[in-house]
Structures are given as C-alpha cells and as structure tokens.
Image (cartoon, rainbow, N blue to C red; front, side, top):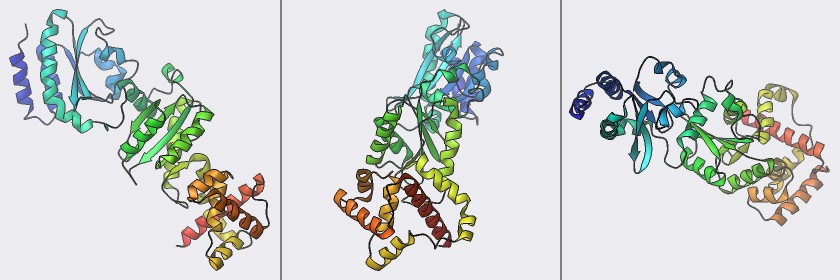
Length: 373
C-alpha cells in the first residue's frame, strides 16, 4: 500500500530542483508505477512520467495533447484499460491546468485522488506561468484544436481535420495597439464559435460555422466595436488556416497608408500588398498625369477633404452609409462631397472599372508619398 507521506517527501525535495514538476513526476512514477502528467489548460504537457509504451503516443512526441489521445487523458477509464484520476488546478475558480494520474488497480483510487489534490497546490504557480488569458472561456478541446490547426505536425493529414465545422473566418490581433485578449474577447462575444491560437506577440482567432451572410455581419459588428485586427475573407478548408495566418501577418507588415487602427480586411489590403512590392516601378513611372491630382490641388486650395473622402468611399465599395460612418460625417455631407468630386474629376466614380482604377492609383500615390517622407 502506498503512503502519502512518502509523496510529501518528493514534493519537499523538488523545491531544490530546477525542474520541479519533472522531478515530482519521475519520483511518483518510480514509487507507484503510475503514469502522471501535468497538462496546462491549453493542452501543453509541462511534465510527465509514464511507461515506455505510453511514451510513443503522438501527444508525448509533440508535447501537447492531441484530439486522438484526448480520451487517454480525460476519460475515467483510458482506452488501454487503466484507471485514472484528474485533479483540476484552479486560479480564481478557473481551471488553469490538470494533473492526470494513470494506475492499474482501482483499489488505489483514494490514494491517487488525495495525491492529485496535494499536487495541485504545489503545481499552481507553474501553471499560472502558462495560463492563457481569462477573458476567453474556451473548452480544453477547443484549445487543443487551435494548437493542432497551427502547430500539429500531422494535422493536415489527419482525418479529424476534415470533420471540423466550416466555413471559416480568421482574425489576427497583435500587441501593437491594445490588449489582444480584450480585443479577442469582444470578437468572441460577436461570434461564439471559435478556436484560438496564442503566440508571443499575436493572437489568432478562427471563427467557424460562418456563412457569407454572417461574415458581413461580423465585419460590421467588429467595426462598431472598434476592434483593431486583421481579418480574412471566408474560406472552406480548415487546412488553409496556416496560409491565411501568414497572409494576415504579411498585411501587418505592409506600410500603413490609412488609419492603422480598426478592422483591416484581406480584400481591402490585398491591393496595398501588391503595390507595396511594385513601389520602385511606380516611382519610376511617375504619377503626375492622372486627373485624381485635381482633387489634391482642390484640397490644398480650399482646405477641403475630397481626396480622403473619395478614398474611404472606394474602400467601402461605394457604400455611402458605411463611408459616412467611417468618416464620422452626416450622410448628406458625404453625398454633397461626392458631387463635388464627380464635378472635379469629370468621371463616373460609381463605374466598377473606373472605381477600381481610382482606388489603385490612390493606393500607389499614397505609397509613393510615404516612401518620400
């Protein structure tokens, strides 16, 4: 029969070790031959000790609980027939991690439950260091999926990758302007179905079960909430997440020609990305022979805001209401300015081909001017 006092001795000795949790795990395994795992709330395996056959699990290899191994860690009787106890480590009544113990004989349940409870006190400070933000109320499985999407080495080939619920929309938050967790929590209130992946300076949120119609509502609500993020268009394959995340990160590195705050959509910033790479050609070609410069001269002469008004109008896909909200002007004011712009340019700015050319030129012009500054 095992004695809890022996385990107290292990815990006391571990305080002198560099790897406290690893030391405890190894000592408990040596004494009881029970597998023991310290798992953070996001599924990361912080320390463990177990039999050789269990060490071949994908979760052990990758250092993170995977979906295929989830039952092994969190079902009362694991798939290999062992019993287990799970002790939750809490901080302010929230789970921040788990201590999972596997054993072969059910008569030892009381001992291992007591051991798990004791270890939660010792392990709390180490779990707190790994604690994710408390603004987002995600299940452990959702955290695991978020990790697998972006880091799971075998996720793309896994059958599970084709069963996750689409369609998808992605948002990237960075620590440049505000608290990423607070911003992401606002998005989570707009759309409750999401996975999360956190890196040192960024937070990626993957919204799922998003139709095109819902996506437009999400964009609008995100703008009303004044969220600061880079947001993709909808996509169908969960395996495209890594590519989309890389694209959003590229958008974040592109020179900012508009207000850097707010929701930056993939389709609006894609042109900017293209033109930033062609900037040397743009400068060489010259930009002084296009009628759009008449707006700039008009603004300089009469202290108007026609150039910025047109740019915002075109970025909002010629939507008067949306552009007026972005510019913080009355709708009638915007309509009056648009008439002035049409008269000045002598162009139909609502013609699709003309509006695309105008927006492209304005982006190129702004990029060229920013490079001079």
